[in-house]
Length: 91
Image (cartoon, rainbow, N blue to C red):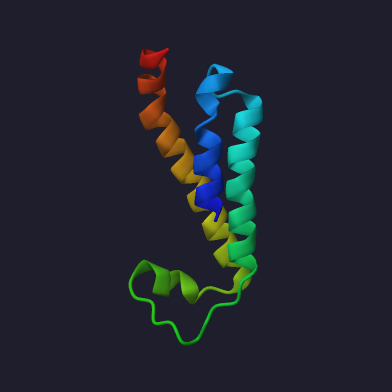
């Protein structure tokens, strides 16, 4: 549902002349809302996770939230560093 909302919103971004502050707030807000809903959810005992998800699932709720927030910030930084030169070239 969140991906659908972000995709629908993204179709209107070019009409605004680029990604502005409002666009950033809306798109990041959707993602933060998504993360908030996911972190409030309980871990289902019926699911079997393997690898990294299984490792983080063993953490208590506080550290698990910290890991999710760190990974969100780290991913944003990596995406920005990878896309910024390309976006400047398009402008």
